[in-house]
Amino acid sequence: YNLEILEKIFCMYHTQPNITQHNKHNTTQAMTSSVVDYENLLNMSMTDANPSSRSGMQPRWQRKKTQVASAGHGIMRQPLSSYNHQSTHRGSAISGGGDRFIPNRAYMDIEKSAHALRSSSSSSFSTPATNDDNAANINANLSDNANDDMANISTVSDAHKEEYRAALSSSILGTDPSSSRILSFKDKAPAPRGDTVNNLKMLYSASGPAAVNKNQASKHVQRQIPSLPSRILDAPDLLDDYYLNLLSWNDSNVIAVALSQTVYLWNAGNGEIQELCTLEGGSDTYVSSVSWVQEGGSHIAIGTSAGTTQLWDVQASKQLRSMDGHTERVGALSWNRHILSSGGRDSIVVNHDVRMSRHNVATLSGHSQEVCGLAWSPDGMTLASGGNDNKLCLWDNATSSTSTPRHTLTDHQAAVKALAWSPHERNLLATGGGTADRCIKFWNGRTGALLNSIDTESQVCALQWNPYERELLSSHGFARNQLCLWKYPTMTKIKELDGHTSRVLHMACSPDGSTVVSAAADETLRFWNVFAPPAKAGGKRGAFDAHGSRSTSKKLSRTMQIR
Image (cartoon, rainbow, N blue to C red; front, side):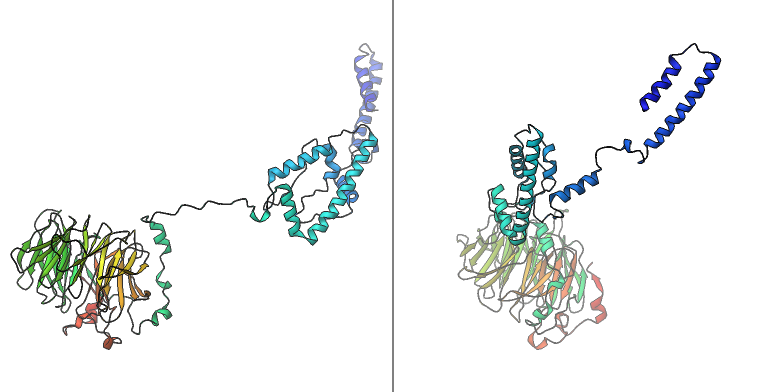
């Protein structure tokens, strides 16, 4: 009908070119009526009132509603079910492409599952429909099979979900579902080497101050241990060198500390400061070690970077002698009555008899690198030496230059600088290792047997025994720069003392045994009332009243500068 109107209009304009004026007027009226009829036709075709304009294809929502009703009248999809009820009606439109598949990733492989579905789909639709009757039969069979499968899946899923999962996984993958994982790291990472240093591990595994259980610590000590230092001294130009020993405290209550080229003396009783000596030379010249004589307190040994060992009379402020024997710096000193042992970067230990003009009585060669720790046993029978070669050597007191160490112990994995003999148990030696070792080890100095070892999780710089109880104080470096008090032999941590901002390189104990001074790379000296005699466990007296000249509280709280 529409085409007839359009043809009529076209003929009026093109088939009668030579019409009269009267005919032209009639033609215009006819065209006007035709255009009006055409517009009315268009308006009617845009509405649902015209049944001829409706399509024979049903809307999608009607088709979905019909499909759901014919498939099972409201059957819902079950969890873990990969069956799709739309495949029954859409299967004829798919040519070998498979249907949508929603897998359970913990039990199935996507590629294998898709391949299996495509294979079964291809075999199901491999026979073409020759006529409408065959196609109707195939669709009917598929609908019946789908309904049966849906009922079976629903039953299996509700009754035996785990068995259904296992059966589904084994039939598709051919593997046990319990051992099937998407991300499975079967090969473990190789173990690190023994000397590997992981600074991040030390940093993030270090326990904070709050990690110490106060209730547990109170079971091991009956005294109150202050958490803050009683005094802080400024020590500018203190060298940040792990292999040096720059602090010593004598029985006259005088502390000697080496700051670059100068040795200073500080009287803990009255706070007086004395500059003992300054080495001459360039910027490469410095004091590398200091050590007071055991008895008397008026003589001090000073090791230099030039390899000499000087002996000074403090009361007279005079150098008594200079002893050679080393070709490089002297980093460690230890006294045994009149015998002074010195260890140097040249890897040897020299025993000097300060009473004799020919002072060199023995040269001990047991290390291959710098000797950074020396300590004589309290009975004077054994000398312990630690080196940068990770060795601990034990020497007899009657050792000559041709002798070998009684024991050479190689259990440490880093430089052995911290050495401390126990005042409570004979032949008990505590040693501490550097950054790559981080362990405190206990030895039998007579047999060389390793008694115990504990990992402190940080560099061990110095060790100091409590002269009154079986306790050990250790100073550490990265990452906390703290002091730790341990209960021996259980090695239970009693107290942690924080305050230093750089590694605590040196420690020394007061003559009364109650106070420990620590020197760190932050160029400060801090005094800690960490030890106490049994009779003074509840008191507040410290090393500063050893000679009856305790400073006032105001002086204790202020910071003093050595120079």
